[in-house]
Length: 289
Image 1 (tube, one colour):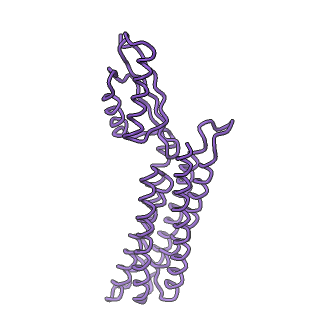
Image 2 (cartoon, helix red, strand yellow):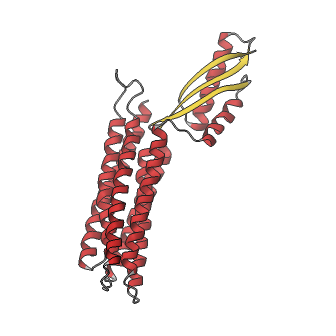
Image 3 (spheres, rainbow, N blue to C red):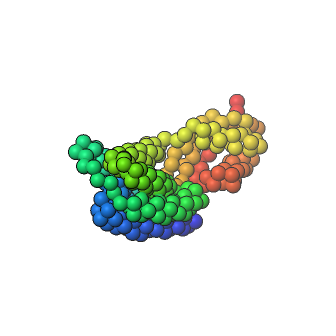
């Protein structure tokens, strides 16, 4: 369990890096977007300001997740990480809708004035910076299987693409197409909403004890390779933060004694731990009659 708490501590570092990056990027984008008249860059900067709040929510969730089990939380507080992802998704969707509304308003009441090319350079630099943060967070999230940090990483990648789209819109406006800049802001809003929705869908799926069938089938394949297992009578799995909780009922020969049946359960646990890093397993053995 100590290893899992250390993993969460590592995820906190990624969340802090995201917060620092978003503070710097939002200040840069909002100031340059305002000075050089870019609707898209300002929309992107506004997105980054709310990303600060979303990353803070993830950071707080990770901190709460590290609290040990108590008399009211016998499984620990790991699901706080998933709840933080859910909150982050709400923030992103709300901001995306606001950006989309303002961008559409700018198109309807369009004023033909192209933004300065400096705004596009800023967008490209910001895209490269946040992409590096994405690579770092994704690497850690995969290593420790952190849903919260993976949500932050997806947000990082979305922001990188948003900044590239912003740069394209600004450059296009230099060639007599200034309306592309507010149109790029519309695309920015849509991308923000989509990323928020994807994170919401995954977080709500985990919180309602959803588990993908393909992953469950993979677990079943591994259990069936353990000598002595005749068949799997029941297999249930759910996420508890970055942990998988597994309940298994297997049939074994009715001629086995208690010790032999216990050895089979130990072999199943070791197999799941070594191949899928699943450590929270409850196994019930029944005679195959």
